[in-house]
Length: 142
Image (cartoon, rainbow, N blue to C red; front, side, top):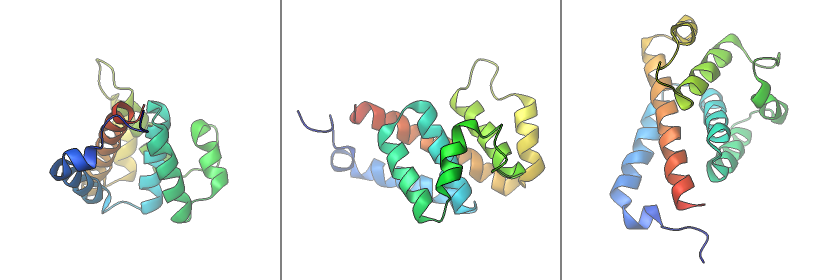
């Protein structure tokens, strides 16, 4: 058996390119380290080993401190994260583990305190994009 069930890039290159374009556009106005922190956290929540590995590596290559990456699962308790990072991680967790009530108002309000309208929109799209990548990757690369 091959390492993956389907080669999504080869089978649907137009869709793969569109997703990659969405991902680039979504995070274009975000701090690259913040975008990678969000991608790593969401990938860990979703259990996507492929994306977790890729984005952990990308975060380190972008200059992220490995101690912060190690502390990411306990970001609420760790002093290593800024208020903006905490707000982004809270929003990422709420969107990833979304329930019938949606994203709590307090979580969204915390994000609004740290991000202007454009940055918040880019953050929301970045979170949505990594969730999509995680789900497709988990299905294709069990």
